[in-house]
Length: 474
Image (cartoon, rainbow, N blue to C red; front, side, top):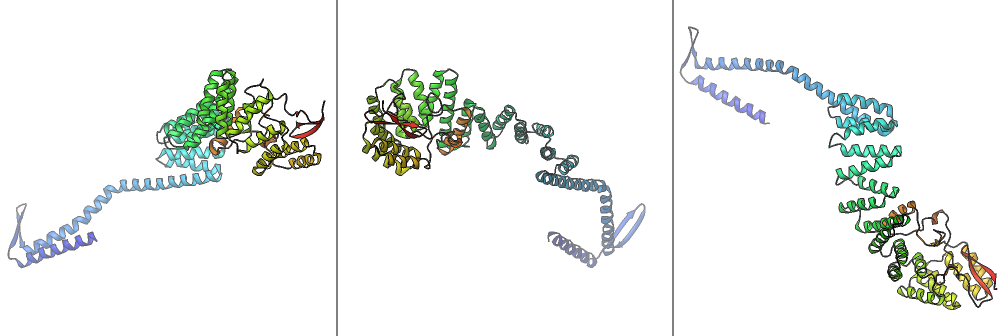
């Protein structure tokens, strides 16, 4: 529209100028190399107009001739770019489709045609990966490290290649570098943290977790729980390495972060007892019990004083029960103490409440013990039969021959980092692999040497792989 309007304006001006020249009197006289040319004004205007009408197309044609090489070069460049882009697209499609021969062919072609080397390097790396040529892929990704725009991508590719080789140390190094490079990408944090956890590098994982928390890459509550697990795992490691002071420091930090995390409380209490601070160990376990009662906390609480008379132990365990009297674990301890005191009805009442919450084999076995104490052999057999098909509960004393719970290996701790850290769940690490049920005869109110015996009865009930068998009284 603008061009049309401009042409109309020029045409109107020219028409007006011509009309003015035609209607105005006067002549035009031109002297050219000694020759004088005289003509009317109208003819002069027409002559000039015709001259420029011929001159402009000629000039335009000459300009086209002069610009022809450049136009041809630009056309060739556009064609080259289109072919290069097509090769990149086809190469990436072939790489994702697993056609490594096609991918490599297009990668080589793209490297020749595309002026942008970053995309060509990416296609070269992907083609090599699809072909299973890890060294070639690493060379391509290494080339990306020279450009700050592609360095993060190069690190990711080199990390994945290192993992394929099984070189976790190199993979960890690339993840650390990527974490420094990018403040927004989540994969460097996630990958580095996972590698450190799998390697049992607990202190390094704690530092990485702190960085992830600063960048808001992990939720605060999950970060706190994860840190509690990592500190507990580090405490266990230092305990194995005979560094009790450092182990105790780590365990107590974990307890402060997550008082209800039973492994932290149990380890901290055990180390405090070794330091001669049984009173402090008892306080740690009581706080843990108030927060989240757990069988292993009760086991640890029982073992604080190994030479304690049975009556005193029962009294102390009832003190633990009173901290959380309505909790299922408290009712189970109360039932076990009642059984030791031959208070069968009291034991039955507590077990009924626990059974309503979770009718597990553990509770069925305890019911069988009550029936046995009442000389109800038929009832005991029924409960034992029900125990054989009831849901199981983990035995938290089977992790170590000596009895303390939570003597996990690094794999167990690694699982807990995510199980407890992300989901807040504490699951027995070997329960899914067929570990023992918690034994109903594992009476917390008595020391290990006395567990299972009920004095004053004609028969004794004892733990037998989670069930009961009758023994003749001596």
